[in-house]
Each structure stands twice: as structure tokens, then as C-alpha cells.
Image (cartoon, rainbow, N blue to C red; front, side, top):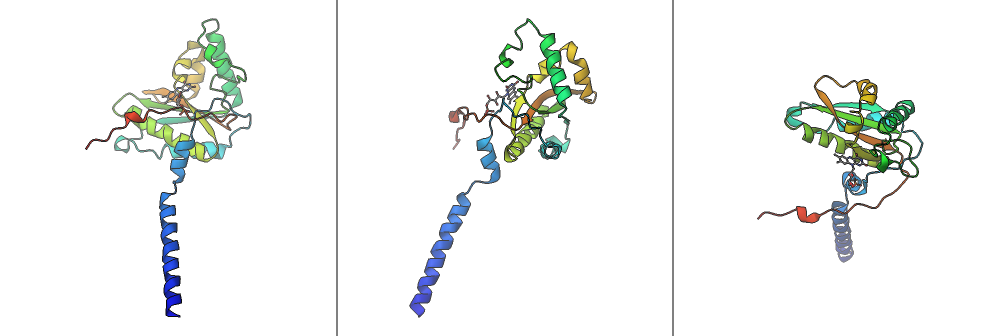
Length: 208
Ligand SMILES: Cc1cc2nc3c(=O)[nH]c(=O)nc-3n(C[C@H](O)[C@H](O)[C@H](O)COP(=O)(O)O)c2cc1C
């Protein structure tokens, strides 16, 4: 009887050890999202639920910022009228210049890489501005991945919304004085699943 109990205890200990090792090697949801995220440039017409867009923005502002100054402003746009109107106005403004040629591919819906929603981010000039809004944007993109949404960071909106013909659209984002539009995140339900782009791991070095 004593031998059976010892054997049983041994088996339980072994099973527990295997379980503990497996659990400790499991990836967290964040690592899964980091590995799964891609820039998405084709979206379904299905609109993104407003609660999800709000949640994404709130995940954004949970990012760290220098001295917790939170020097950023975030604007969510999901109006098809706004997106299509702004897109058409830009195409008209740059007609014949070739500036928009790279966007006009089969399946083109709008200049924002065809997204159904946009999250615009602005920051003031100054130390750590780029770092602050970089962390904010990555929070949003990873949270979106976890929710099954696609995103694409669009630095191009800076140039697009600087076109004089788009001044009303830029103004409607209502950024405070001293804040400059930095980028927008295209958001939507993905209609493509691109392969991961290659990364250069030689950029990482250990210093002993
Ligand atoms: C600051 C910044 C600006 C970007 N601007 C654009 C853009 O204007 N248009 C676009 O299609 N992609 C843009 N991208 C997306 C990059 O092209 C993309 O992240 C890169 O090719 C790596 O691909 P991945 O995001 O799928 O890993 C931008 C990314 C960053 C970080």
C-alpha cells in the first residue's frame, strides 16, 4: 500500500512539473498579438463597432508617456461621409500629379488604405513627443489585433491633410493649438492576411 501511495505521489509530481513547464512556456496574449499583427490595406465594408473603437483609443492612452504628461490628442472618425469626402477631395486636389497613383489599386475604396475607421493622433513639438505617441499607437494596434481588427499606421495623412483643399477636414479634427497631426491608424475588419514582412534580427546585439 505504502509503495502504491509513493508511486502515485511520484506520478502526480511528474505531471505537475510537466504542466508547470508547459504553462511557463505558453505565450501571453500580448506576444501572440505582436506576432500576428500586420499592416492591413484591404478591409471589409462591415463597420467597426463604436465600443471597440472607444476601447482601442482607451488602450492607446494607457501607454506610458514622459512624466505622464500625456501630450497627445486622439480623434476617432468612423463617418463614411467624412472618410469618402476627404478621400475624394484629396484625389481631386492632386489629380494629374501622380501623388496618389500608389493608392489607386484594384479594390480601392479610399486613400486611407480602404479603412472603415480612422484614429488620428496629434502631438505637440517637444522632447519625447515621438516616443509618447509611438507607444500609444502600438498599444492601439496590438489591442486591435486581439479584437480581430486590422490596422495600418498611416504617416501619409500628414501630407494629405496638409493640402489646402483639405483644410476643413483637418480643422474638423479639432486638435488644440500647438498640436500637429502625426499619423492616423486605419482600422477595420481585415479583408486580407498578408505574410509577415521580414525583420533583420542582426539589429539586436548582446553586450557582455
Ligand atoms: C510611422 C509609420 C508610418 C507609416 N506610414 C504608412 C503609410 O503612409 N502608408 C502605408 O500603407 N503604410 C504605412 N506604414 C506601415 C509600414 O509600411 C509597415 O509597418 C511596414 O512595411 C512593416 O509591415 P508590417 O506593419 O506589416 O509589419 C507606416 C508605418 C509607420 C510605423
